[in-house]
Amino acid sequence: MKQCDAELIALLILGGFTDYRKQFKAITRQARSCFEAADWQAIQRLSAERIDLYELIVEQVGRQISAAISDISDHALWVSVKVSYIKLVVTRDDAELSETFYNSIYCTIFGHLQITDQMMFIHSGAGTLSQLNALNAGQISRRYRLKDGLAVFLNQLLDDYQFSIPWENKRRDIRNLLRYIRGNFAADVVADDKTVIEVINSVFYRNKGAYIVGRVDFNHRAVPFILPVLNNERGGVYIDTALTDENDVSVVFSFTRAYFLVDVDIPAAFIRFLHSLIPMKSMAELYNSIGFYKQGKAEFYRGFMAHLEQTSDPFEIAPGTRGMVMTVFTLPSYPVVFKIIKDRFASTKQITREGVKAKYQLVKKHDRAGRMADTQEFVNLALPKSRFSDTLLNELMQVAASSVDIGVNEVVIKHLWTERRMIPLNIYLDEMLHQDNEQAVFLAINEFGKCVKELAAANIFAGDMLFKNFGVTRHGRVVFYDYDEISYLTECNFRSIPEPLYPEQELAAEPWYSVSSNDVFPEEFSLLTACDRRVRKVFNQLHSDLLDPEWWVNMQTQVSQGAIIDLFPYRKLRRFDRETPE
Image (tube, rainbow, N blue to C red; front, side):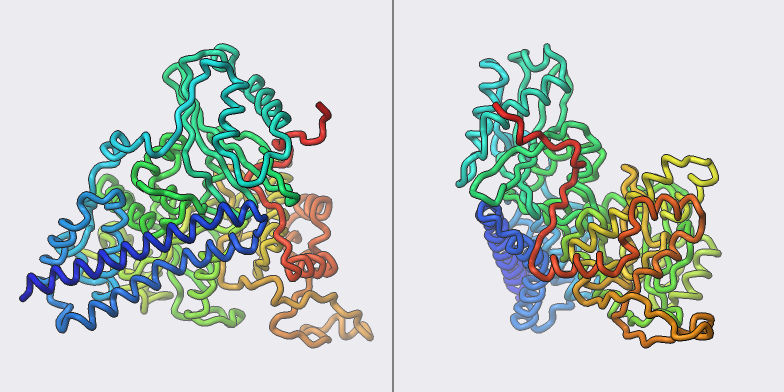
């Protein structure tokens, strides 16, 4: 009877996974027609719908198993379930995703407890990525050679990636690409018929852009490239620029951006190819970038546990100003922070624990506009106690005791988020000011203002805009990462501070005017720059419009009217000229 139950559970899980993959593909494949129709709101809806899909199907399968099997908490049963499931998925092209889906079902039933490799896939049993890559590389990409010259190749490339609407000016786009290539690659490369160009079959869609992604192989060296394609919203498309610098390519796949909608048949081979283009990105980040965020979480967990086994440095309280809602710690040798909700919040914070979770879920589903860090949520994460100092353990027990269980050998965090570690903007500015690095201060403040404006264009108001809530990435970009006070821009009421009727009102400790919970007074943002006259001077020079309620109201109007602002992952100066006559 046990074996029959095990086989039934395995079949139910596989059925749910098959349904998930089918629906995931169906949602993803709609992106092309939405791009061609310039239906940008639809693309954003697809992205949010696809994120919700996983949890919906996991919950559905969990209910099916509970209804079919009387005792689903029998550990011996799940040992057999895993064995049966392996037999069902071992030959699948998406075996690693199927394992992670199984783990999600198991953790839903057992509450993320009783986690052992005997009953779930702590270590992946799927075939190696290199084997999949070797067997299936031909299904991932197209291969081109330059035997007939560069112009012929580019013409063929644009034909092969033709959309249902025509190229706005194909001849011009080819000319722009020729100029770019000849200006950035040696002549012997572009003329060598041994040079191989591999281009991923599937086009990557996100927001208002479509991206053709590939690499150039020559002289035992590979150079990645991305060709962003834009819709002119008049029935034509065009190549907006070319990106071949590894850092530029990495920014396109940044952890601060919404997930791509891209059709993927063989995920492991697809990720291996992407990793060959941008090796500085982890497998976890790449799975995240194409919408397999649960697989990204699984890859992160495995990689982090392996890192713990190979290192000895202790966890420590993360540098920066202590948060009023979160306590944050990190491991110096690993570029991630761990964020735990405190048991009690500062009196100025009008939010609940569930409210904080809802904010983080909003960020997961919303267009992050390249300005908000992605997070991974963990429940009952067990970490080695030997890596925690007494100071850190005391801190955790003082401010977040309800979320922490300290055992003999393990510290179990009942709920936390992981997030890419960045340099807090306030610390970065202090260091640059101390060094009299005016250029760095100028760039950081400019980035800060752009971050706030781009979030607003994506219908996000950061709320608490103190510098400590923003971070500086390794690419020098400023990113927002403290989400407990974010809201939709359209929910805010931007006001000017009323003039006082008499001097005593202005000197009073309390405001002389009424203030509602959604009221925002942009003039008060000037306090952000009170720290240093040099910071204030740069901010006022570049972004003084953020102190004007009218700027915010105008942005609200645009967002309310359904405008999707152009926010592309590269600088405007990189864009090709579309106006030069033939």
